[in-house]
Image (tube, rainbow over all chains, first blue to last red; front, side):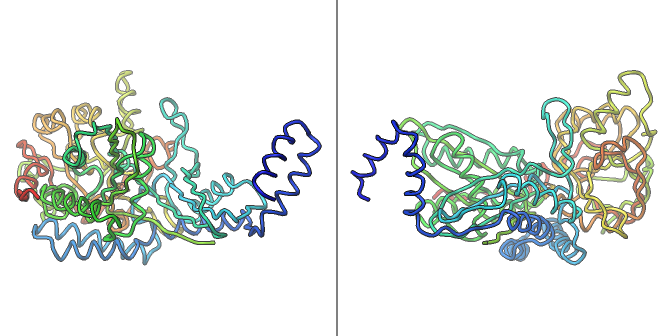
Length: 314
Length: 187
Ligand code: SF4
């Protein structure tokens, strides 16, 4: 069916309820093959990821912590890094949470556009995965309702915060990021003036880290979003944390800014736990997006050293 | 070298502590964080006694994960201390002598540590699995309905902390930063 024909059907459809059923059939026939994924499979996956993410630090994070330990000059900071590494061994061995703050459960979904989710409601399936995973994994329930008044614990760490992207293909990728309050509470947004440029971004990011001190549990992974709109730039900052530690933004200009910021952050002297030292951050990850001619939004989302995340592809 | 100190902390032990000292705590400490603090302060405001006698005690800001079967506690590291800043001067007035948390304190709270001759210890945030191993006994003593935020009496052995704010007004965060800060040549 060519574009002209589709237009005709569409305009005709507005006048004819009867054709809607026919049009649905045409759509199905044109759609090609959809891959069915049962939502129960999603529930099981989220439950498993909740536990694995909270017991085992990702390899890239462990490697970065070991490197920081090798490069660290401050004796106290060396001890802190040793304890953090020892903690990760104990958590993995005993299968207990790396940190008692097992976070707000942030879920990133990349849904292939040829995927058809069947067998239930996706939102409920994701929440059920969190509920099961946190219960069976002996993880802490940290979510409260009525945030400014009663603050009642939901009792199962639900609801998760869910971000979805529709992408080509027929796979479903789920990444869990249990995000602790200590570091999440240090998130900051600034809408700079375009003229503030790179210097404005550097100053704002460094100020955010200075003011946060020990609260976000350095050494940090510093997530920075630049561009877009107010809400999108915070999303970019969070999303940048999904990148492996040590990987740079593919855009050389952005990668250079990551390097420059990392050097400046680690010259601050804040160090692990803000007790002094060189390793204040393991990485600075920046994601950018085109923005409006009047704007230069910058978002900062700090990730503590307990940089837990885990991905599965269905 | 770490100093071995038993709780409750004596005035002599407190006088001997300087910002940056590494300490291994042994004895009883009590957990309390946001919700328990609010309740204690509200009770005191109504003229009631706090649910535990705070005189000479050590308060640990933590909300542990549930224990696995066969364990007494789950992961139990420190939570961010500044959230308790508004409550801390009252807690010190009620006799608290030491607090364990993570991150810095406000100027007002640092001054209160000096005037009440009390200390603020830092424990390593994100080391809850390791710290749990130093906790030998756990009893919920108040506000059980608060779940993870209930007040627990912990018996600890060689619980590793560092002095962040001592009774002389020193601050480890300031000291550490000024010692290790360096200037970077502009690009
Ligand atoms: S900031 Fe991270 S490491 Fe620190 S207490 Fe929170 S979750 Fe744990």
